[in-house]
Length: 143
Image 1 (cartoon, rainbow, N blue to C red):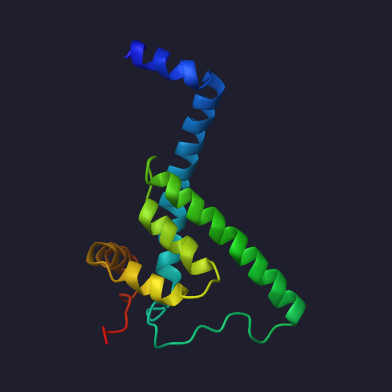
Image 2 (image 1 turned 90 degrees about the vertical axis):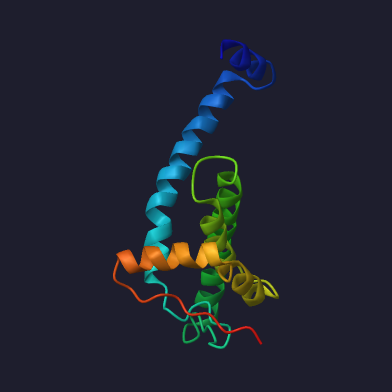
């Protein structure tokens, strides 16, 4: 084990390793808290492509713009953290799904439907929602 640590320290400083370890712990604990908090509060038809999503529609245009910018920045953070969690401890796929849902880009709803349509992802989310007494997510049937 000492040989592996010394080999890694040749390329990466000890401070960097400590920082990465701390970030890994923060991402892991943060994902255990944030992911269920967000997924349980989503409406059951949130990922149904037949249901339109109107976000901040009745707000002032400047407030709407600021809200969209903030939402996209947070989405990028979740997407990046989810990507890191593919290699570090944490719920990478679910964190990336949250990040994608917060971003605004063409074809987003189709990508979300494809991600949520994976049986393992949908069952994990619906099991989590069931534990908190919320109805399961519904998705649009395949055309």
